[in-house]
Amino acid sequence: MVLAVAGAVGAQAQQLEKFTFALNWFAVGDHAAYWVALEKGYFRDRGLDVTLENSRGSGDSIAKVDTGRADAGLADAAVIVSALSRGSTARIIGIVFDKTPLNIFSPASKPARTPADLLGRTIGAPPGDSQRQIWPAFVRATGIDGSRVEWVNVEPAAKIAALATGRVDTIADYSTGLPLYEKAMGQGNVVMMQWADFGLDMYSMSIMASDKTIRERPEVLRKFLEAAYLGWRDVMADPEGSMAIFKRRVPEVDVSVMQPNMMLGLGLMRTDRFRANGIGAIDRAKMCASVDIINANMGLPRQVTCDETFNASFYTRVDMPPAR
Image 1 (cartoon, rainbow, N blue to C red):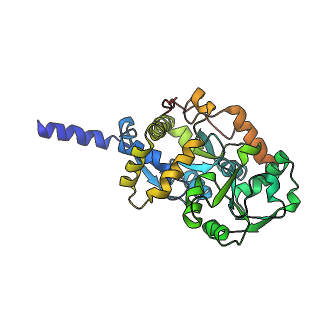
Image 2: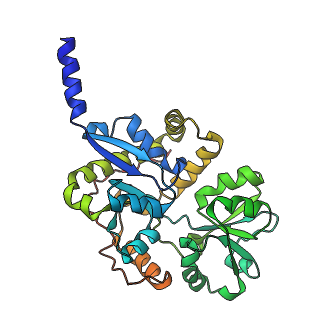
């Protein structure tokens, strides 16, 4: 009997289909849901053997998806659209953050709380940073004089140090990074200015797959998305328990930083749109508005159409849990 059960378990394991998911960075609180889905068997129950792989930004995760080194991945929507204009086949198949994390950090000693506070100051970011490229749209949305703001080149790994040491007055970075800045500068010593609060809300962190995977493995993508969003549902329902799973799976994470990082990410997902349509659902009107902003501001080699940007046919609705 034991041998028969063992044989059945072995046969089941052999039937699992391998699936590599490229994160957009090293493991942070924004990614906890995928380890929760692994721990609770949501991928396995759908016949998937999922591997989570770190990347060095959205450009790297897109390259992995394009070349088949990953079956799906995480990337910023602006970078995906830009890559599409340059020959990539990566398409958005699900959303992570429904509200944009685009944001500017400043020290509490010299805060930039409104767009007008940026006048006469410097903003640090890499030259190719998507937020830096979207800046003209923010200028138009807020009516400020963009010529009175100076951008300073700062490499991604040097952003926190550049703000902490006063090399720049402000830094353009995702709002979910606040705990990392506060770790360096002290809690309460960093001020956020979220772009969505001033009229510019566009899609950002998204789940993508290549045309090849979309064409050849549609059912696998459908199963992966459902399991991933079940992981997000459980993170929303039990953030503390989910962080404990994340820490167990990725021992090197600093819970004191990653717990608030994860909670900031959840704040970008607890929206009326996700409540009405399910976690991760793509809203076509918002997607098209986001594509319009990207086309108008990022200097793409060709204009990308809205409909070529995304494919919503793999989505299985997963409802948000009741409010805690």
